Length: 400
Ligand SMILES: Nc1ncnc2c1ncn2[C@@H]1O[C@H](COP(=O)(O)OP(=O)(O)OP(=O)(O)O)[C@@H](O)[C@H]1O
Ligand SMILES: [Mg+2]
Image (cartoon, rainbow, N blue to C red; front, top):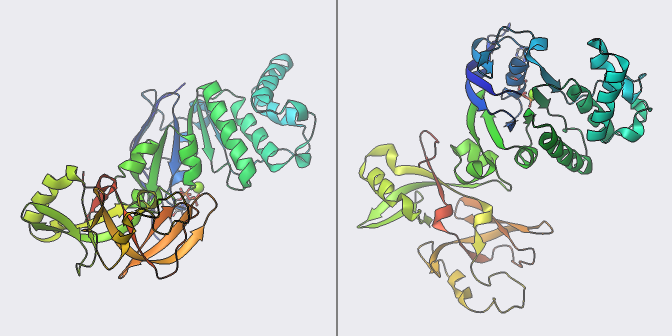
């Protein structure tokens, strides 16, 4: 078992075309038995980080330790870390049992011990029925399970997986997600899982570490990343459909406080919990007044009845709140609204995505699937101000 600590870790690759700074001042603590996903776009430095943990890549500066013991200069074999990659790299002429047992044979374990361990791993990875077959006759999902099983059979302290699902189809991926979750629960090993797919990361991990441009942007639970993203990048990267962003300025009128776009055609009501801080920023000069407001499509809903074909009676009532060009100062019940014109109504089965426009500002809302709206129709969307996220326009960091 192992707790992994990365302290100010840097990776710089020398290159003929100048240095590549692939990992910058990376700090992360992975608890013993924790399942952490490393998530980020292609080229952000995920594999480089993993390879330094495993010992396949020299650490340019900084320290990596396992249970407080510095491992920078240890060989991969001395770290007891297993790594599985996207490619299975199985031996095609060996049976599944022989493939699984290979790492044990290399270590000189005797036949009965090998058999016992193979049976145990085959049981965990649901490979018992196919132990006598050879890799070419297996499905992609089965081959991937053999590959994971072979990495696990050495009983590593740390298990590292790099994009192991990226070439599996949706059904197999779903099955593998379940397998990995069970595996983690059964083995209780520290696991680090690398992916650029937020769905995989959020489904699997206790915590997700989000990387971009060689930097760790935020490490947190699903809820932390979703509710309090550290910066605009995380708010944009986590969530589907993507978060809506609005460039706004803080406007005060006596004790009233609003966020307004440059020509005043769109206003938003900030969370009450932020009023004091925003009032202070408004009193300052320059950039402090400028913020990026963000709201997730899930947190915008059509004002009562508008666009709904349901006959439950909700269509009556406050539908008139969408009429005219009333802006966000108007409200439905206690929540403020934004008015906008419908551009696209995309039916997704369980939900529909509305693409909307208010002047030059485009944004999206996730609405019930039976929502009937016409292109160009004006609708009002309500939101709870507490769901509005605010970022500094200059630093792009969350304003807490
Ligand atoms: N051996 C190397 N020599 C030079 N540059 C490298 C080397 N390995 C990686 N890089 C560069 O370092 C950066 C980070 O690469 P890395 O493979 O860690 O990214 P990644 O997040 O795993 O990307 P992907 O999602 O595409 O696998 C990239 O710009 C890459 O081109
Ligand atoms: Mg990679």
